[in-house]
Length: 114
Length: 115
Image (cartoon, rainbow over the protein chains, first blue to last red):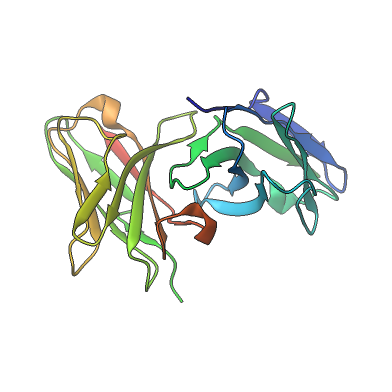
């Protein structure tokens, strides 16, 4: 069975600095998707970035980028120029090719310090 | 263009009562998924429905829980005879097709508190 592990329950970053959130996963599949979701206090689950396993190029979305290491089964999220609005819970998620289920990690709470 | 609408946002029930959680998917989406988030945990899959059909309920407890997505109206997650352990945030997501390539849109969840 696939698993997703986020080993950092909480992280802090100074405003305008860069922070990296870690995620590792376990799977025997070769084709899958990985996601980072942001959950602010409003509880809304917001898709931040996604990565297709067959793509070697790391996905980027403005200030958000990932470091996808397929062999190491690692999928970290880097947030550059952190803003107060980035404070939230961040969840890493995995989905097999051809399925609809997401498997979520336990989340990392990010605090942004002014 | 409204996203996924869930109501109520907060629901308090006494032990033994019934809880009904509603989810209206994005207009045009015919696939609905329910996830549960226990305190300090990630979301866990419960059930996947298409209009009038349950496709996969493998993540749903065998007793007291049921879900439906009628031809007309919202999807309903029903929990009968609630217990304290049912306290959680319940999220609904929808998609236009049944695979994740089209992307899920999540609602803001219903927080159920059982007292």
